[in-house]
Length: 252
Image (tube, rainbow, N blue to C red):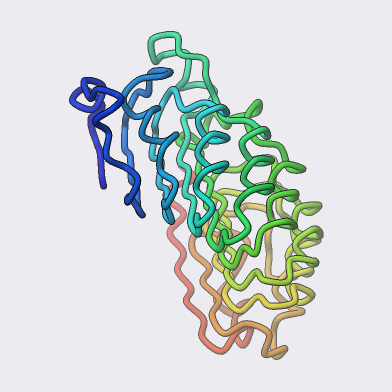
């Protein structure tokens, strides 16, 4: 089920929301009122396998906790959340997701394979939502194969070090993760199962961080896009297949 407007959904009577058999739920640009409409849906999807929330304001920790306590088959979670700058503009709604949600996911989602976090506005990143420790805790407790972090300013070289113990991680994507430097990038060669690395618009990584990967046959695929300090020459031979693009217009 895909929903892009909450107005009709908010009119659903609680008892008529048919979601016992729902396996995939994608919500975009919805305002979720506590105890009504979509909040009721989230709390009753016991067979849900895939959840995608794109700019859904009003989703609370209690909604996510209630969901994961019932949805024991969740395999994929994708969250694109409003930044701290955006939230005050939306009718004074102050609800935000925190580490409590991540902790509940880590505790209950034993089948989680794909986890993606994206913050909507990189110019005004969220400083009071998820912490580095919350993300690390989830990765260490769930069998995550694919991790994607977009504008997650708290993820840094310490986070990269923690991924050295992520036994199931095969695909890592970092977009606008400016706190990751060469010191963290060189640790990629120590990730047990990683085969695909995607870097986009990361200012802190350079050709020096790529050197341990060159000729190592560690990666099957390396994608580097719009990272100003990484050159085509620097990524040559760093994976079986390499994709390199550089358009720095995003910086100006």
